[in-house]
Length: 373
Image 1 (cartoon, rainbow, N blue to C red):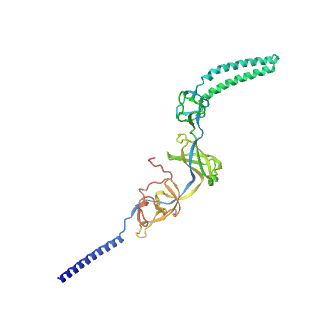
Image 2 (tube, helix red, strand yellow):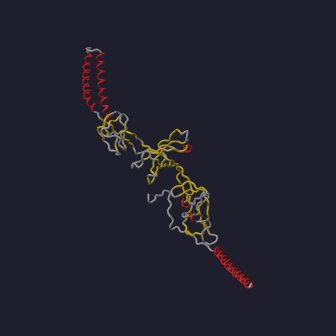
Image 3 (cartoon, helix red, strand yellow):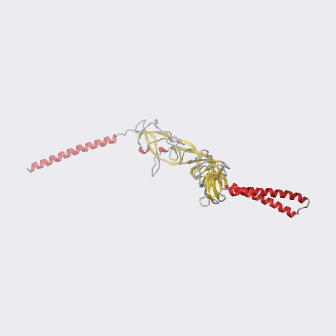
């Protein structure tokens, strides 16, 4: 009985050993196949690193202000009897905005004008009588003073009527109406805002280190997130002679044409001052860069040492500079003419075999204009 149990256990151990050997042989075979297996090459698009000449510019955030902008207000207290403007309309210099009640002044004006006529006649008679010494010099001087006082009274009434007839001080675009018909205005009460929009000023600041390169007449490009499309161009018209003692920045003002009135006072914009000196850069598409916390890199396409005539990737760390459109400048780590992968770098690895196919390569531009804009 004991011998049977012993033979059974021994047979079981032999079966287990045979199965373990077979499984180990299978695993070893799979490992050998895995080591010898070669992944198929991935298809990539490429572009050579090229040298380019970029315009040097200084960027800053600016604010728009009107060349002329005021809130038209009442000079004298009176009731509004006529509103002659439409809110938001464009007006010319001298256009009537509102008319205040001038009935009292208009009623007093004929009497004042009659007094002028009377004093003028008296003065004319006194001139003749003074020649014949019929009147004294004192009476003549009194007649002259009376005539001047009468004329001053007429001019005062006319000036009051003119001040209550409020007109546009310059041409521009009106804002929201702030008065109503029949409203009694006090001195200084606002009526409507008036802004001259074409041209328009752009105020911005740059560090004092750039002061030596700044001068009146340099071109300025203005863009805004709320205004899609190309930059609006103008020129620097003022360089402030005073440097801010707190920020060490110098204030600048540019004048920009605004015929479509798309730029409005109070908006913030991005400004770029174009400098006459151009810089040479090594430009690559921004999509060629694999961004990572430990360093940015690109994949250089080189000859494969394993497959004759094949291509493989070499990961190269680079240092980046200024961005412009679809391109970014490389300051170090890459040489001109080296071919790099232009798209899909996030899925690649160092040493990977690739096949180049540029038929689907996207176009890269310094000033792209996406279709959905």
